[in-house]
Amino acid sequence: MKFSAAITCLLLASANAFQPTAFAPRTLTPTRFSTDLEAKMNVADLSDSELKGKKVLIRCDLNVPLDGSTITDDTRIRASMPTIEYLVSKGAQVFACSHLGRPKDGPEDKFSLAPCAARMSELLGKEVKLAPDCIGDAVQAMADSASNGDVVLLENTRFYKEETKNDAEFGKKFAAPYDMFVNDAFGTAHRAHASTEGVTKHLSPSVAGFLLAKELEYLDGAVNKGDKPMAAIVGGSKVSSKITVLETLLDKCDKVIIGGGMVFTFLKAKGLNVGSSLVEDDFVETAKKVMAKAEATGKQLILPCDIVVADNFAADANTQIVKQDAIPDGWMGLDNGPEATKEISAALSDCKTVIWNGPMGVFEMDAFAKGTFAIVDTLEEITAKGACTIIGGGDSVAAVEKSGKADKMSHISTGGGASLELLEGKVLPGVDALAEAKVAA
Image (cartoon, rainbow, N blue to C red):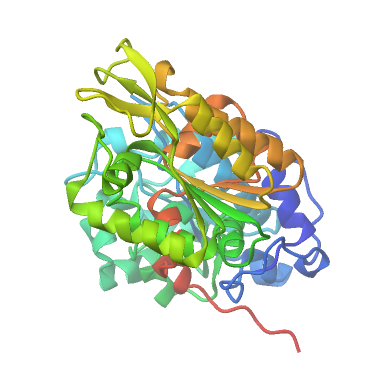
């Protein structure tokens, strides 16, 4: 799955100001990483004649946060625009689909994609019509009457329970009006749903969009074939939710930095007092095994040497900085201390590839945000020196965006669960279902 200069330009361009682009064959510019998933086709593999006049179903991730009918963060919409704009420029008839929220029983106004259609219209500079449904006669009629370059947004796919069940008949109905399929929704690629996997049984070719291709390039390519030294920063509250990715990254990386609430399960595994800090007692033995594996394989496993502790889980709690072996009874660890931050920054300073998943502390509260934002600053510095820095989904993305330095990182993943599963080495159904790339003679 190699990127052309055109794809790179599209992905770097602001979705707020699309300009006509000359699209070169993708073989002109090599990808940064060669990935194990490079055999999958993407839209750049298709000729102009394979796109012009074709009715293209594209699965996007438009699951944006809303305040009533107002979009509070349009990042996912903007991320979907380069592939849609490319298809429009090639004269395709574009039919975008997505889920939004978790409707319980059929259509609900609060989960309508109408706000997304309006925002897409603004970004594209042309009308994006909202279909009244995602399947059925009305959708077929809109497909029959569409002109080249038109963009239609289908209504919420999860208004049907058959979507998440990947019902075969529903998938067949969903695919019926279209000639081909593009999956550009990395955030749902780990789900075998009708709109991500089911439709591929009826539409050929089924290929990746630019966003999905870029996610695979970084998250799969960097972990498996990234430059060394390589480090992983694994944070968050629980060992249980990160143990598989932690073990996988320990195999791949030279250094693994542990942060967040999961630190205290490791400290307890070392026989240290952790006060009232969050601990998963069922995973203490697991933490011991991880530390033993790191020592046996010569990997550097870094736990914070000092910790910001508080007497209450509150923004105005009393705080103090203590060594990792001196947490008082009744106090809880909520962030890395300054010495830990220095040690982590030093460990990252010579790294060529860094994957970050999960914050160092409760960064939503200013009193416990310094450790997390110090990581952001360090990653900004090493990125500027040529390192590849990948923010692998979840709260670490929110932290980087809150810092205002998202554009200073090499890659910000749009997937949460999908990012974790890809980092774990799992097969993503939405990717596995796509067509294989043609092998050049």
